[in-house]
Structures are given as C-alpha cells and as structure tokens.
Image (cartoon, rainbow, N blue to C red; front, side, top):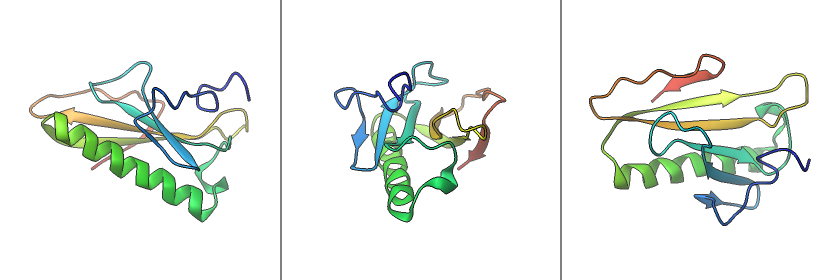
Length: 115
C-alpha cells in the first residue's frame, strides 16, 4: 500500500529492522524517544500476524526499549497497540518512554499498557 506510512517506511530512518518488522521514530512524538514498531506485512490486527512476525515485533520492542534506556533516564514505558478493525489501517505498536519524574498524557485513541 503505497500511501501507508509503515509500508513505505525507510530503513535509513529506522531504529531497527528485521525481515518481518520495522521500528521508526514517531512522526508526532509524545516524549523524546517515542518510536513505532510495525510489521512489514500490511495487516489491520495483531492476530493476523503469524508467530514469526509477532516474535519479531516483540523483539524490536525490546531493542527500542534498550536503545532508549541507554540514552535517557526512564521511569517506565507505555506500549500502545493500534488496530484497525475495518481493514484499512496498518496495526502498529507505540513505545513511549516516560522520563524520570515527568507526567505525560497519552492519546486516548490508543490502548495503552504501562510497563
């Protein structure tokens, strides 16, 4: 899908790339280090991914987390899962670091998990 920002994501700008997934900086970051992990295959739901694709998405989440922690003091992380049940969107995961001692407000349209 040529208009999808995750299908068109450049590996030159990526924070991590595998055969099945890519991690790119968020275009409108909530905090410094906010990154998005998306499968390479255009799917609307996490459950459409096979086991290898899911493993590579989770592996990139860990890679991004470690990269962020190497450069910023982080209190916690927020993981946000975005799915498009109408089949038009590309599912992706937000990884948002919460800087030490700061309060952040997460966008409401995303399902968030604090880690």
